[in-house]
Length: 229
Image (cartoon, rainbow, N blue to C red; front, side):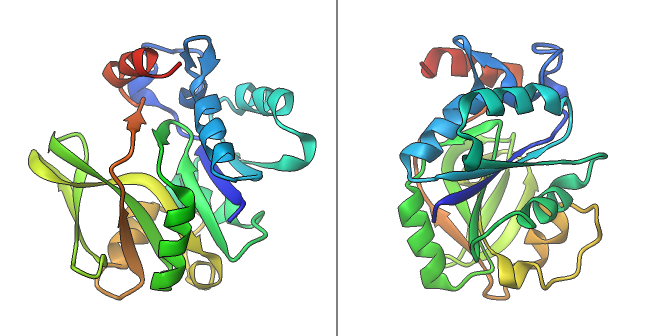
């Protein structure tokens, strides 16, 4: 596994008051854009090629990519209009060159072991594997339920949960299976793909209690300033 799609096309509405002029993944953390921490971790885990899915204020991200990555190490796809998470992934997958591709968000840093995740994905023969972060006392995220075989059997709406797993926003997709499914140009990956794949032996959860931060709200953006150097 040497290839990753980074989703960085969202509007980031909850962070716009704090960083009004930049796309969320370019929000500065101690003088560096948050995206640089995501890229650095992926490179440390052996990722050599990046496919960037861009939309809102993409010119800021494009400039950063061209200035900081080798010319032959990335591809850029730009949504002319919002395609939803599913549409963005489907579009970016057209640039992938491997059967199994890693997908992550440009505004979330989840320091999992990608080699172990890849091995898990291959062993399960899943269409999609999701990294699940154990969490306590949370209401910002919906919980995910798995069975003893690590199959995902339910996604739950956001609600206070004393202890459980959340979708960490890192996926491994088997493209031959995924791309043969029929989706519209615009769709929600979570609602129209993931939730419809539960209980069919094609969706598995890889639990890893690694460092996780999502800068989608001002409180966690401030937390990132302290924790990331």
